[in-house]
Amino acid sequence: MKRPPVAVVVVSVIYLITGIATLIFHSFEASRTPRLESDVIWILLVCLLAVVAGAFMLRGNDWARWLALAWMAFHVVLSAFHALQELAVHSLMLVLFAYLLFRPESRAWFRRSPTAAA
Image 1 (cartoon, rainbow, N blue to C red):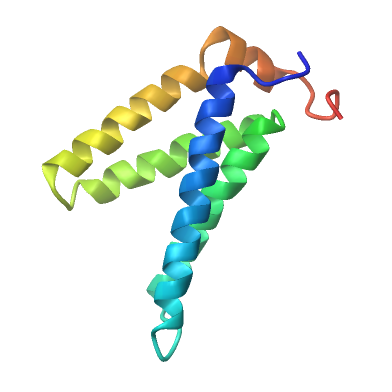
Image 2: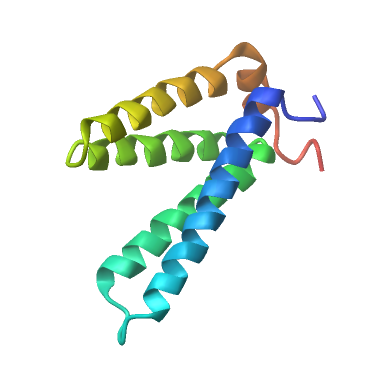
């Protein structure tokens, strides 16, 4: 398999776009504060993890699939402290992403050697 399945591409692109967009947004937000607070650093790190997960899922690294699911599960937990609608959306996305990343074609993509496609 030389190309990732469509399901992996879709999820990866969502993670890349979300990670990059939130990284940019929170970077501008951080630049407006007189000093860099620890919360901002953690937020930027979490945004960066989304980019890493998306990029490495496209390469076929299995650990990136698990990182992506852990990232979304983290957001489900955070959403529990916010509006019920936010919790529902993040929970639905977690279930959908897990389904897409564990379909037979996706499992085959992550089982192959990542260096085999290079």
